[in-house]
Length: 388
Image 1 (cartoon, rainbow, N blue to C red):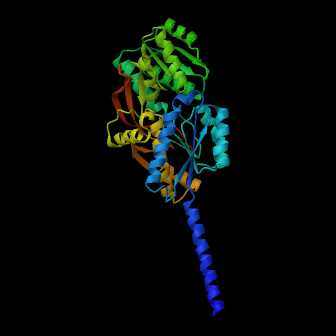
Image 2: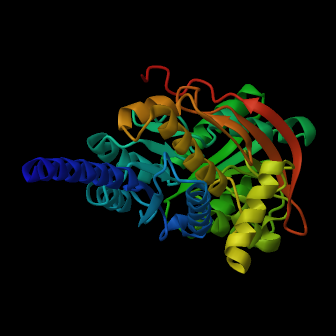
């Protein structure tokens, strides 16, 4: 009899240990990496991106996590550069062993990161607006591309303000050149004329020679496409200091940066998928939650930080649809799920990009952004037609 009881005890103990192991496995957190330019050109916009990531994680965990697992945030500084991104992604993928990466970065950083994403086979949501046509089997994009962003500004300048001549200025890297290539082609298709096109290295700070060329060309409108953050600020300040007053459309400005520029940004036009003035319940809740969590330290939500926020919920929906964090299943699900957030409904089902509602905005004397026009569900066009 003792032998029978001992045998039963051992079997029960084994079952309990299996149960504990299963429970421990279920309790293993979901690790999401965020690579962002805490230093370098993007350091102006990075704090808002980090805050929106922290808010999303807090809200997801408060609601039970993802499939009952809590979410852990792993943040790495990509230094707003290709070299920095390689270091950040090596750390996140191979040391931290994250389940996914959700990141707002420069195009140079993104391009440097993709080979590491390929080796690690990690689902990647790129949340920054960018020059388009970056295609990778592990990557989805919820930011805007030129096909969605350029037309509102150019059309307003030509049709409403009578602009005929344009000067283009950019940072000399993939985003700056890619955006302005598309912009030049679009302007010329509309019958406009580009009278100048100039670039400065991504870390350049002295725009004086380019400002002189703008003054000589006397364009009706200036359109810039610089690296987000400090290059935006430097160019705008030097243009205003020179007394130039033509129409000014900025393809890379975010609302937070515009507000930090004070009077320098007044009158500037921007085309964005997210502005704080969007009037819907989801946006009001988002802004209130940021204020409640961060108080006086809350950064202005913008077209870089809001897509970062919503991407966590898109990833959550994909994991739930996939039934787990298996990378291939999650990547497949990311093209199928949607999230109704501050920008409205977003679904990355257009060749792993998203149709987006775009807003034409202008910086007002009180530094707020007035929404002049709204364009519903603008298609991103042909981005990655051969990606499977």
